[in-house]
Length: 184
Picture (cartoon, one colour):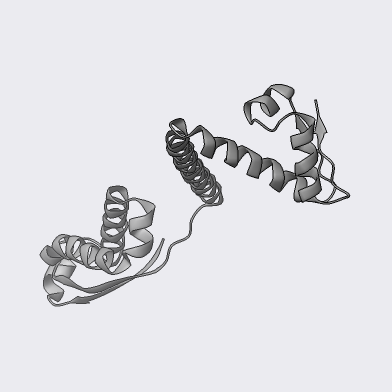
């Protein structure tokens, strides 16, 4: 982290007598304060909360330097350099979070689809005619598509009351001359 510290000596006597080398002492006070503040924050707070961090650092350093006759006027964080290893780890964490969110969304979608099918099943449970019409419509829609081949088990044909092969032939005529269903 790169920061600038602006300070002023307001009592030269104290600055000369209270500490051996006030220039070095101020630098050490600033470094230790910076480590304290960084240790209390996560990286996201550091990156977006520089102004608050500046004020906090100024207060801490000023408390340490005032007995020496020095006042900290301001602290300004200029740059935050993220080590490459930490950058890679953060990237992996962000990617894992995006994947987790995608799975949650997919799971929610699956729940909605299942609920829709359950609702549809309830709509057809007491109305076998509607169910047969829906099944025939699905079959017809499949036959409409060019090059579509649909294999319908004979038990399904019986269930849909299509009348065996004559019902399928009628469906095929509706679908078109080139589309023929296959019965099995």
